[in-house]
Amino acid sequence: MAEEGSKAKIPKLSENSPDDIKAPQTARAHTSPRSFEDMRPASARAPLPTEAPATIDDIKQQVKDAPATAAAEPVAIPAPAPESAAEAVPGPSIGADLVVINWAEAMEQVGDDEEFLHELLGDLFNETQAHVESLKASVPSRDTETVRQKAHSIKGAAANLMCHRLREAALFLEKAGMSGTKGELTGDALNQTLDKGLEALLTEFDSFGKVLKEKELIS
Image 1 (cartoon, helix red, strand yellow):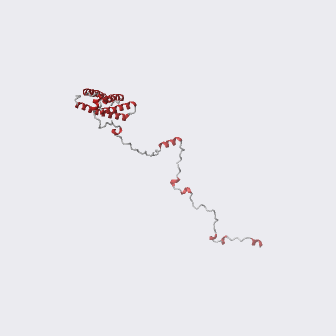
Image 2: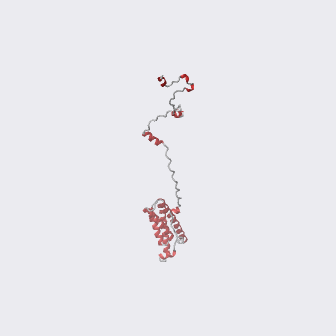
Image 3: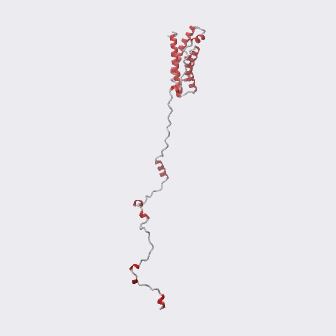
């Protein structure tokens, strides 16, 4: 009887109600029946294409084909306004107070021999005319040494007979020829200087000729 009292009383199956019967509790699975991969969109789950590793040549070609980075646009610097010929190279400055021929000084040069002065002025006109014809060719051809020589001859003869305006024009052209020969004047500066010098000389020679015609020293 003692043995029977020590054993726990085992209830009969029929004594338990259906609600008392519970299935053995097992470890719960993840709350979501889907994996992370299943949650991704179908387009994202598509296998990524396998690319071959890029070679050095591939990289060089990609760099070559890539659009060039736009360089900084240069700042446009406005070109200086072109100078006029008068501003770039001034012509000879012949004072308005200078006369074509200073007769008083010229007479003094020849000892008041008017006839001799008239003869010398006629010779000056003829010689200057020959030099001018030579200058009309040597200036356009930029023969600066010939220009210098011819202008020097005119300058000296005009100075001896007090023909100041003609002398000033010849002096300017002589200096231009000398500067061109020495290389001190080149390019456009030389061209403009020679052209202006010849133009001034022709103007003064024409004025000189008119005075001589008024005096009936030349025909």
